[in-house]
Length: 147
Image 1 (cartoon, rainbow, N blue to C red):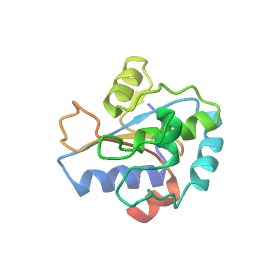
Image 2 (tube, rainbow, N blue to C red):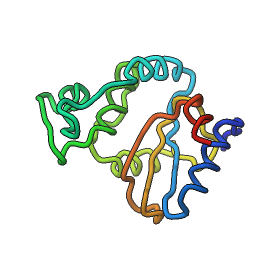
Image 3 (tube, rainbow, N blue to C red):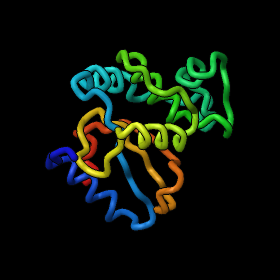
């Protein structure tokens, strides 16, 4: 396991207090290159769907190789894939948060504590740890404001 920082502990504590009905886990890749991930992700803050609520964003266009929109195309996984690809990582290409989580669990790159900036964070809102319904990238200064 990895040693936790104060802000990652605060985020995990906040998430656990926010709802006992969901779980959070972490996918760990090559952390020495995470500064690139954070820089790329930060440059994307403020990206909006066009039109609002459509899931039409550049990450989906790159991911699917064509412009897509609608409820069948949530873009959290496409965004994470895009950011990591831009940073030089070879992340598993899947639109399914559950498939991604299961692949990295099997590879031994999955932890339940020790969150570090740039880690991929997965969410299971059911709390049953059977499916992963959302994915994102941990950015510490945002976590400090959430706690």
